[in-house]
Length: 440
Image (cartoon, rainbow, N blue to C red):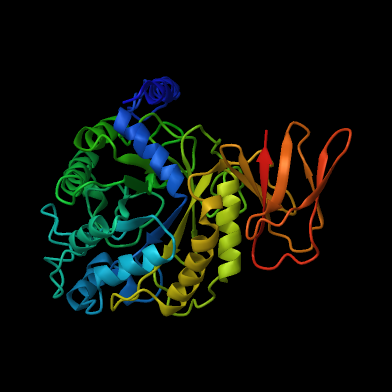
């Protein structure tokens, strides 16, 4: 390790160890390993990932929360005996996702319905033992991701609508479970045993992406998720494995990334992120291509590729990743409408990825006209509103040159007493017109 990198890692270690203490058996501080810090850097450099919500709920075509609609869990579980995704092909999935320009995949290993998408020894309610398909799709996907150089992350639900030992809380109240058998110690051991499998049998895993903690009253200190021990287990098995938790509050010690659901960092249009302050951790916003996370047969309202590209650019302008969701069909294929939009995003990133990958938030915060990203002394001004003709730069930005990113055509600018103004050409085609600034 060279001296400059050693100094940087030491500084990051110190900053990361100063994460404030919190409740839920997670008091104290957290000092990430050097390989974890490097994984954080690479995570942020990747900027774009694909979220995959897939399970037996896809058979009902009503989204991933179908079981919560007053459905009996035992009746719901019978669908597993008919789950046979004959068209699942890990090579096709990973190739299509890589073609989109995404650099990592986060897939639901176990969602709130309790069905495990791998060959777990902790429950027969899984894709190998519980379905005629009988194949471990996480193993096939992990092998293909490693082969093609795509990072694989596992989503893992903290709650379970099917197990009697999970204490019934805000959701899944009418699935037919026996409330008298609630035993969080038993459920906690089950979760940790499953996490050990995921981090032992599937090669290097980029992150564990938790969800569901919000089901219990943990904000008032009335429920202890015992995060400290669980996070320590994960980091002991794979120190570089990042931990994110979609709990909608400021990150706890032991977490390595901060997640924002259906919103950009600092925004709360969806109503999920009102209790969450932006931390110094790597940031990620997750959102859907259409309206649902899991496959919804009637939801064909896919966002256009231009809209998705602009959202990706806005996220990058805030120093955040975009985790964009796809809900595979019950036959194992990715929806054609999703592939079409992802391919267009890949075409755009093939040309303009240099302004997104391995960048940080630019010196110009989001404005009505767009945003900015930065790589070293190079600043990329992303004009997302095609009607924009002038952009005012911050007074402290020392500008040497301005030119279009696409063909290096000079862009005229004037220096005023308090600011510098870019004068844009009349034609700004495409979802994002990019002007590169060379700064002093």
